[in-house]
Amino acid sequence: MRYLAPFLVLPVILFASLSVRADTITVFAAASLTNAMTAAARSYEDQTGDHIQMSFASSSTLARQIAAGAPADIFISANQKWMDWLSDQDMIAPGTRHDVVANSLVVIAPTDSPVETVSLTGDPGLVALLETDDRIAVGDPDHVPAGIYAKQALSKLGQWDELSPRLARADNVRAALALVERGEAPFGIVYSTDAAIAQDVKIVATLPKDSHPPITYPVALTRDAHTDRNTKFLAWLLGDDAGRIFADYGFDPVETLKTGTTPQ
Picture (cartoon, helix red, strand yellow):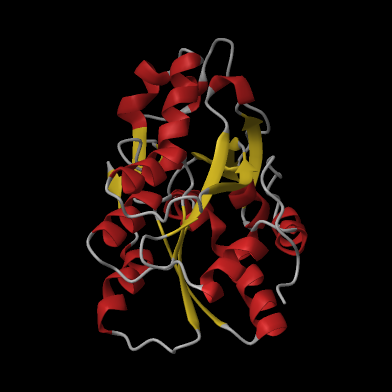
């Protein structure tokens, strides 16, 4: 079962027809960064007077849009795969790629669910808690980073074969979160940062970090975006000012190049 969130994709599609201010920095960022990057962009605008144009969707959607010619200056992916994919197509400016933040995966349920904790390692597994027509909301494991990580984790935990037919496959992780918030799915697998900003869900399990590759978010300039303005914003994103904002929204730090705070 597949659930789409066209409202998140539409801004990307419309970019080709929009006029962009000369001082605008256009950023395509993974949907799970919506709140944190919106706050970071506003802070940077206040400090510098530059204008940050944000667009959020699944990393796969954004990467494909960039490859098709969408005018993004900076891309932030929720996994390495889609940054690698763009790099292989010579769409990333050499020497500008860095990991900016890290995340973790959790299982969520609606706040009014009678389930308080879920075992991910013993019997019965998560599938035993599902009614006949129930589905677990996840980003589509075929292309959404959160779903790819979820599949890797569930496979290692020995639950993928049972759970894979019972998934509500969403077009991005925020769409999966929304299904649980609305009570349309009794459980979901999302990033811990998504659960932290949601009003109507609770965490019932945390997926072990050793059950999937590290969840790191790479950032880079796109091929033709190597300007002074864009480079300064990229440096700021990797610095302490932005790091504090990301931490406020629950993201973990990664070992990366710290290139400063407020640009001069």
